[in-house]
Length: 602
Ligand code: ATP
Ligand code: MG
Image (cartoon, rainbow, N blue to C red; front, side, top):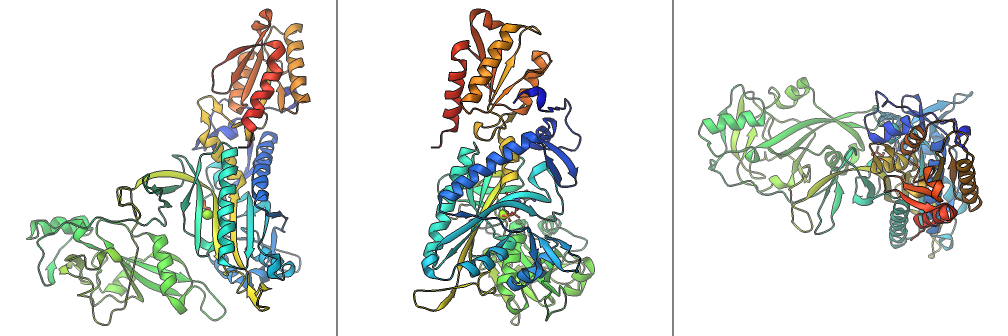
């Protein structure tokens, strides 16, 4: 491609609202045009990058034996009613919907479990056809609350989504493992340092899941990991060993203490330290957080019925709301499923405890539907808890000893694990890093096939629901994550495999100088003839301007035909690397070797 024909428009200045490198650089170099909030137009350069990402992903997913298909983006409400997800996705407003001329409502694909399960039910009848995996690369829509960071979180994006169907859990485990290998290979080929972490399954559901993360300081996800055991998990789901609180001088029997005008746990501890309990710390307190859980509206239930929930964790720790939501769903039984939690409003706290906010505790007087207590508080010794009475606490509460006889509690893991806590496997301190989620794999089991009656005839001649897995890679987010990992002060540094073009040849002689033009044209034509994606910068611009543009755009190799031609040499300048002089006659051949080596699939 000749640069004069590329409509190349680059910006000197950073766009005002771009907070992270990928967003900033992709806008500045003309890859993206903001078309609306959370909506981007992919310019010609971006189109090439995305196409390459998709090709690599498709190649690696196909290698597992998966079959590529294309599903409709418009999804019938009735299909989603069958799986039971319509109400949940409507209530959380994750799905965008449209109506046709007959007022029929459709969802715009946020994911495609229902559509593909319906397909499998139609085309896969016997265990002899299993396992089978279908995948597509198609547009997805999500009504994100806060679109941001350019392509990272948008309302419309491209996802590779794959769905596997099995006759047994063992078969699912095999495909799940093969997909993890495919992901690892795909990300490595794209020059991304990605790693798998244990993840929460979220709205997709199922029995197990891993996220693939690209390490980046700007990542929205926190990951806890242990170098010794290899454990790595999203903080939403991480488990860990929490050091026991130190011993302290607590009363043997619970003692109600007036604690006037203290609000926070720190205030309560400070007050008690000054009033007879010198060695009490926040780790001896019991933190009670009160929530309202919203259940999914259904035909038989009032829309979004509310359930009150009390969550207890140690005073120096935080409630993990993802763990809490999962726990509520596991234990609420007939009342579930629960979609979301919100902290109680002050008047709700007063109704639930009979006290002002700040004095809730596990004793009599706490009136909530569900009490969930973090397991670390069981037999943890004496604790300081709210007395469900304004300006009063109880010192020396022991759990479960001092729970009211009629109180039903659930013991569960509710605590947010943090760096320094012990690894659940090795016990060594966990470390923390941030990551961008680029892919996700889920073991779904029969979550979709059972309610949708998607069944096959087994070896026993009986009907069985498919055992399923699903797998997603955000192809457009991957492109942004690659920029996040590969950039410098001058611009983008694309890995060769996903660069929009691989080599740019820049004539840098005096305007109209025939020797530079001829040399550049010759190298350019030789590269094209060998299938290299080459650019020739034939624009009427100063060399310095050209160099700046290609650094910003991020072309991996620049070949400059300039002053060196006098002695028969051109300059090779890998993006971000050292330049070297190369004989003009060898330039094309050397560039071809370089590009091919960088693209080699290992
Ligand atoms: P997130 O936690 O970032 O909202 P998710 O867990 O909802 O993502 P999945 O349902 O697992 O996403 O979708 C699979 C992949 O699609 C993600 O790993 C991510 O790469 C991509 N993806 C999801 N939401 C978006 C979005 N709003 N914009 C761009 N890519 C997205
Ligand atoms: Mg996910």
